[in-house]
Image (cartoon, rainbow, N blue to C red; front, side, top):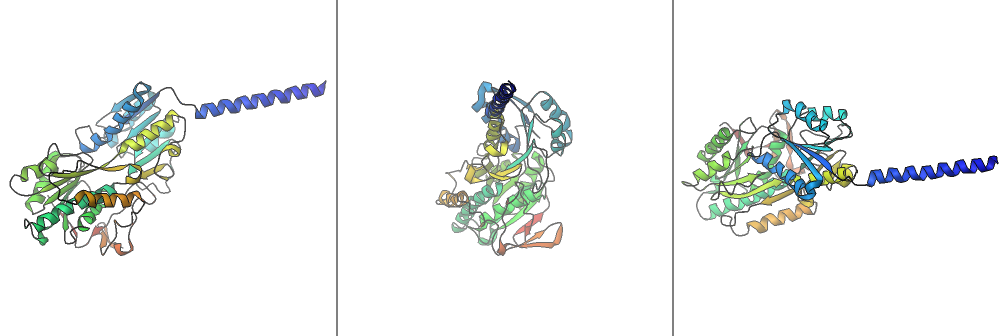
Length: 398
């Protein structure tokens, strides 16, 4: 009789084990019926950076329709992040995306283990310990910057060949927010793209010391144009530089290269092309991971660095938009596509490479010889190249 009891107990335990395992498997792999998604923007959609990021929200709405409830907070400064963060997490958001640079996100994430927090990276994440529900991501923007530099170089070469400017007048202007590695990495890649076509070109960079100021950005661009720059680009948030180019183009030949948002509507005569980070790729994959109860980094397609992810043209994280066919010279699109194909093949070492010496603006003893090359985003999604190219790039005041 005891044997019967023992056999029955064992059988029940096995059945319970199978049931528990099956339930656990279904709970892990089964999709949710609905998800609640939060977005927190550092600005509003009138600025290029936030507008471009908001396209990811639109993509979630389009893909999930009534299966996703979306909550949005705009114009949230980094030091004001805590309240909207708690508001969205407390409202039951399954996942929240941020385009700001606040430390609060990482600090508060452990308090809401049921929510996944995904923030655009703002620092070197290599080896940084983070909460299990905290993630960072960024497109490898230097790739788009380099390709847009090729378009600018092709236009400058045409201007030289047509006699509009001389070789020593091949000057590019760049309106930059701050001298961070993210900004320096971007305008350096852009300049190296220009010099891959016009080897004598030089660049003048003007810092506004703010991410978003229409007046300062426009004034900086106007000053650069007045000083002889024939192509202007930017790493700031407003349409100011594009407007400055369009207004100046009525009297002189000057062109604009955009970032994040096409400026063809506000600068139809001067706009050449725009490079943008496609935030939609990561955001849609991360939302799908939450919907299917899977780890985000197991679903996202990109270069995985722990909880940090990046990618470029190869995974659709970077793209070129609104190439102005009425303005660009013959062969521009082919030259751009040739570089894009190299990136898609995983060939990235050609960007930060050449007979250049880079100097750290904060420490002149820290230099980098680009003859040995430099690989951006190798171990982190945040750009780390922070050297100013001697005799090529000059920092000027507004």
